[in-house]
Image (cartoon, rainbow, N blue to C red; front, side, top):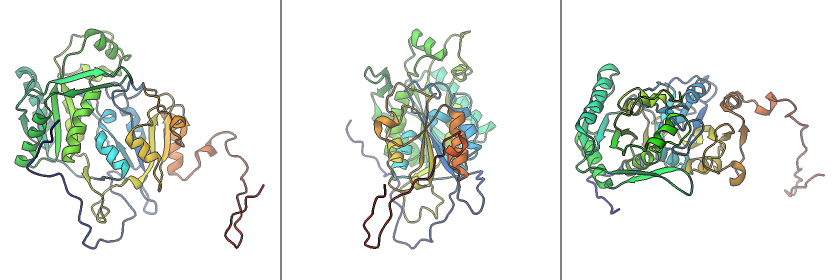
Length: 404
């Protein structure tokens, strides 16, 4: 794709020239329950999208995990695949709604997260959406403004049909895809930012309607989410280009009622759009800033503030997960959940990652509660604490002597 020249640039690095106050010992995250003499405990919950995750691979079925985890930690950072549930959503005061590409950049230390009270949200609709379906989505936006008070300021329609394509990668088994006219989407977002100064973007693309067999498998809680992969492609494109929060909701024609819908997929059966959770999440999603000496003054959260990261058992190979696991300073505790498998094969052992392996999210939250309390999680298990070992001694000449 040829580079699209835009009439503005993404947020530049914050100036490092002016003198800043010394770094604060606390970070800003809503509903923090930390005591004055302890810094807030921050945890990252990751369930990659479009990988057939046993938990988090359907319609918001990882949201209960996020709610439970948020009740234990001071600050929870997660992404739309975990926090979205189509027509349903749950406001978690101490959770940060961070798009996947931005989460990777955050983990790598390239971006920081700045908490906000609210964002000005703009809406982009695919020109390929039928009139009746567009009206349904506009009514959702108006309902969110009137009933929830969300700051949704304007919408635009792309100047071309985006022509979304989706498929399952035959090598990996992941869902993925593309849009044929990404430049049209970029122009629409550019218009919203320059004209209305929005700082968060919700995109609604017209997706091809699924084959009956694919729909039935997914509705029964057995198949893969064929929409999820290309949704990530769309949001990654916009966040990389504009460095602001973004999330996507697919536009699909209503499907016939079924009596055999799994509870894990049922959130997508109760309305005409998947937009409500996206608008709610974006309304107070953190802004993405380049770290600088003034980041602490602005209340930003940095990758070095993260205390623990929770992943499915075989999904440790993403850029963000690897960045956290290979951090050279303030390395967080990595926890993998055996009960949550995917089509991937990126296990901690395969990648040489030191991780605490737990059976399920019950155990993961228990490990985090112990970790937050400053307790070795092994002390909570039978016969997990062995006799202390003697290390090497260091003589006066500075050469280590290893004792037998």
